[in-house]
Length: 104
Image 1 (cartoon, one colour):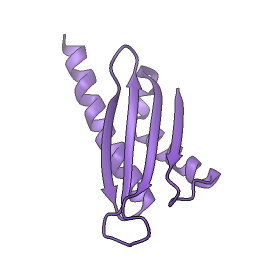
Image 2 (spheres, rainbow, N blue to C red):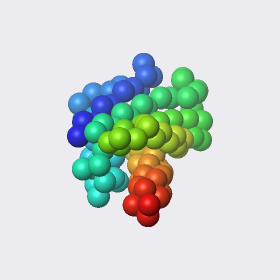
Image 3 (cartoon, helix red, strand yellow):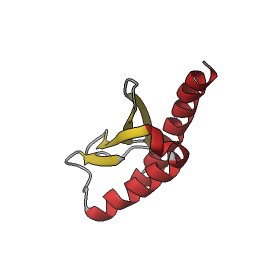
Image 4 (tube, rainbow, N blue to C red):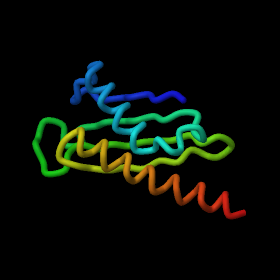
């Protein structure tokens, strides 16, 4: 399973940030990794140069095998918090979608 990290020009996407993002996201959906082919994480500073209370936007798109992509978005005060919130939302959404399929 592949995890791709993308950042806008306001967030410095160095290797350290990419490793942190991969760890947070893969840990958040660890029990579902074998059912996913790819995860894409997009980090964006929504207010650019102005500081705001929830200006970091994290959009995570998961591609489950044999299903349409599933995307979630979470805004928070810093990159790590945005990643954790996004991973939590993705886990809940995937659990719900796979739960519906497993019941059939």
